[in-house]
Image 1 (cartoon, rainbow, N blue to C red):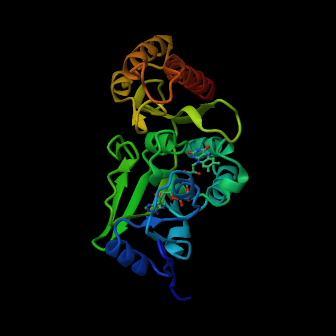
Image 2 (tube, rainbow, N blue to C red):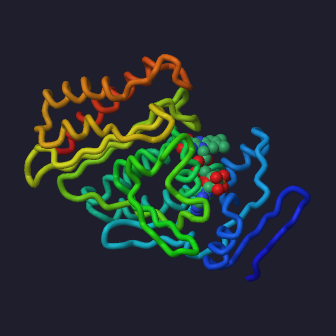
Image 3 (tube, rainbow, N blue to C red):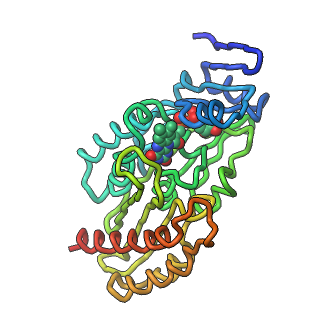
Length: 305
Ligand code: FAD
């Protein structure tokens, strides 16, 4: 296979064949867009009048389409389509004990309500992350689970955890212009760890979320005392966020009604929205953050019993 390149009057489109070529191109054209499914970039160019003079298509890079089962989770190349992620995770969930696949089950739950099959068949996991939309359905799950992102550039590779620092502003991340998202490791869960994802949209299927979330709790060995908790929300700020203060206050507490009450009080304070927040429905969105936690609380209780 040879690198393909089409040059038009306004746009140059390049499809490299190796990771080395891809990395060299991105360092030569740091502002180039990497396009896989084109379900974001296509809309920006056709409907929002954006012009991207250099487009790089990583479809042929094997490392970016690979799936690896590691000691700690499943690693997907960033160009894996959402349908292929779904297929792989379904198999893993069927084969492994349920306690190991809590996060995978939550990803599958989000994918069930993610766009329609036409979009899922072409849209990539990496495209969803790198678009950095505040209402991405997968980013709260990846953030609450502490998924690992491997970035690559001419300077080499580095792996970062998706945490509260990854998204720096509306549609911005810590990824440098010359860097490429190479792969994403979604972790196994362990015994005593529970994970859920919820999404509320105006319409159940094929609709943009109003609020969406990923929630993780890990209990101290054999107890119902919280060792770690991470609540990540989309739709409540210009980026996907973690309810850091609430999580901090809930750590070390027993999973009981008192914790539920305190969590709701803390979330109501922390997940504040100004009355003029873009998207509107401010009261509804604030209420959803509590409703999701209530659902999570009950789901965990049920799973523990
Ligand atoms: P592309 O358009 O190909 O690329 C998107 C962006 O990511 C570009 O800026 C590109 O440069 C960058 N990028 C891609 N890969 C990399 C990489 N490896 N390294 C660095 N940068 C990279 N989203 C949801 O979260 N939930 C939904 O329910 C949902 N429904 C949708 C319904 C419709 C009808 C449409 C059109 C979109 C919907 N989306 C939804 C948004 C979109 O489909 C997803 O964000 C999708 O995952 C984007 O992937 P893509 O491959 O099409 O991205």
